[in-house]
Image (cartoon, rainbow, N blue to C red; front, side):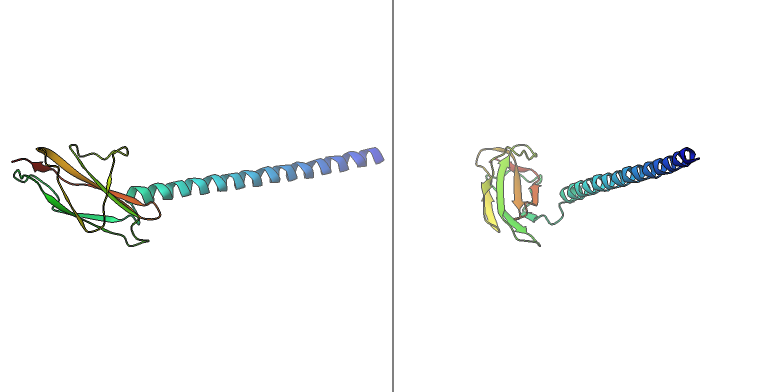
Length: 149
């Protein structure tokens, strides 16, 4: 009779330990899932912030370019505003294509400054990049400026 009682006790303890191990595994799975979701959410927030340029500086240029008649040169005013921490850098370049490449060398300029198109005849696009101290950056590419005489 005592052997039968021990078997019942052993089975009961085994079932309790099995449930305990199962409980620990489920808890670890929940914690892992939470951490993974949190990382994904933070990544999505960063992607959304970068996509919509939330808190990035606002760049204004005047004139904006377009299909004007040829001129020997154009003078363009650059103005940058930032509602957050201010502006840490403003750079510009003139390009013959309306594309910004990270390898482009930008000339540093001050806010509310004027820049002049290159003197060689051709089609030019003004590319302006402004960043704030948090490295939120905005890039603006003008419409075409036709330079020539």
